[in-house]
Image 1 (spheres, rainbow, N blue to C red):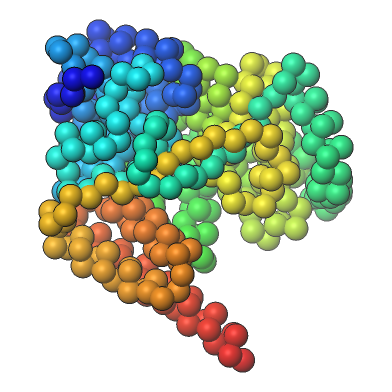
Image 2 (cartoon, rainbow, N blue to C red):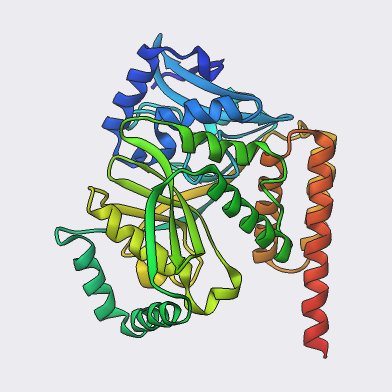
Amino acid sequence: MAGCEIDIVGVEALGETEWALWRSMLAANPALNSPYFRPEFTQVAGRVSPNAAVAVFSRDGRTVGFFPHQRRGGAVQPLGAPMNDYHGVIAAPGEGPSLEEAARLLGASRLNVTAWVGDTALGEDRRTVQVVLGDEGYEGWYAERRAAQGKFFKDKERARRSMEAELGPLRVERGLRDPALLDWLIELKRDQYRRTARHDIFACGWTADLLHALLKADCAGFGASMAGLWAGDRLTALEYSLHAGDQYHFWFPGYEPSLARCSPGILLSMDTMRMASGIGYRTFDFGFEGEHYKKYFCNGARIVREAVVARPGLGATVSQAAVGALNMAGQGRGERLRTSVRRRWAAIEACETTPGDRLKGAMQAAGAALAKARSKAGAVSA
């Protein structure tokens, strides 16, 4: 097969002909069935994310793929990173360039992907997990899960009764688009990042603007909204989600930490699934596996790839210094910590738009990682 050529354009430069071709590629490729691949996500994110663009790939004069992305110095990431939970080349099966070829054509010092959809030998596998409803819908899923994981779900039923007895009747609303509620959720997440010494992805500003902009998007078959759980008059949990077609992607959950014993976030997810399934949603995506409750919920999984494609000798000096500081924090402490450090840097690099801010974020993350490692070492020696 002949190699691809590339043309990099602004998102606003694409016309209806290109968007129609984009939609036809999605229809032809079931692997791209996610809100993140929809034209509407790229159109909104392209207006908000700094240095956004679309790579248009062609072969023999025919457009064969699109890759929405953003540049940070010499590095390239998928558009909307670090919040983009699925990414890849928009193309019909077998038509677009591979990850390796896309990286070469983009000409970046580094292409960083955390959830690449598409075949590649680069990087390593990661799993995302889903609830996939069958013909019996939510009730059928719940009956099957409760039978298989009885202790977990009985515990959540008790938590529901306990919270209602303590705080008042429970009420769930979905389809919420109040910007004040989103601000409440963002502040909840920022507090969580501070408590856990993680990089605050909302400090840069544009990431919060993206969530607000998506919330305002009014598109047929695509949107963003929140669901909330109230106990009496008290808001206990919110979850921000993207949805398109029959796909519902849980994106940013948050709950009041003082009520953790009652699992308000888990109760909200269950009620959201029950309500959303009634209007046609069939796959509820929980993103990467890891949180303990997901193994009790999810009956489906997808494999994506995490990879860094680098061109030797072309890294920016500041980026090299930042990566060096983070690597020092992980030195000698095993592959798990090195992977964590790499992911921290990917998030920092995607959020921060200036070399100084990227270096500052890396140094703070390195300090937090070292402090955590020393704390654990002290606990063991004691």
